[in-house]
Image (cartoon, rainbow, N blue to C red):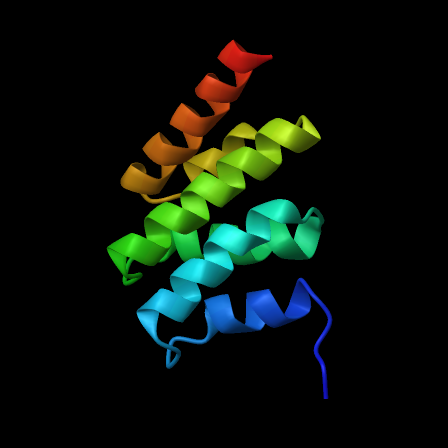
Length: 100
């Protein structure tokens, strides 16, 4: 059975038993998608106090790219992220504004 994207990527990202490199790849690949379910999955990872640093950073970067592309950045969403994830997402948002 083939799982449609981004559902498959989200399931890998949220699977804490999956290998770190697989979860990291899923976090990075999710930046190509939009939608509440994608943003929620990335926020869940980027706000988790026990998340692996590599996966956390990739989730925050993808989240920042999605927010920049889709034109929305709710402050409460950023405030819910771990400090290092918030910093990464904000850097991506700032960089995207400089390019536009």
